[in-house]
Length: 152
Image (tube, rainbow, N blue to C red):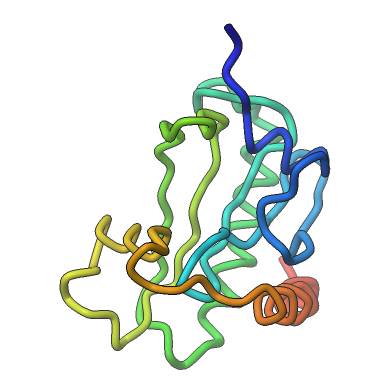
C-alpha cells in the first residue's frame, strides 16, 4: 500500500494545506506557510518532486534551496521582534515523508519551554488556536513582495 503524500497533494494544488498563497515558486522548490500553526511566519520549503531522503536532492536543487534560504533569512532578519531563525528537516511525520525544511522565526519573547525543537508545539493547535486564514493570506502576500526584493 502506498502512503498518501500530503506534500505532493499540496504542491499539485489537489489539497492545499495552507490557506495562503505560495510565497515562492521556483524551478525545484516552493515556499509555503505551515498550517495549522499558532506561530505566524512558520515557513516550509518543499521540493516540487517527491523526495524522501536528502541524498536524493540534486546539486541544482541544492543550489536553488541555498538561494531560498538566504533570501528567507534576510527577510526574517528585517523583523525586529525575531531573535533567531530555526532551520529544521525531519520528514518523518505520517503523510509527510516528503523531504521539507522548516524555517521558523524565534521571537525574543518565546517562552523558555518552547525553545529549540520544542517550538513544534506551535503546530499542535489543540492547546493554542491556529492563526486565522485571512491573517496568513495577508502575511504570505506581504512576505512574497519582500522576498522578491532581496538580491542575491
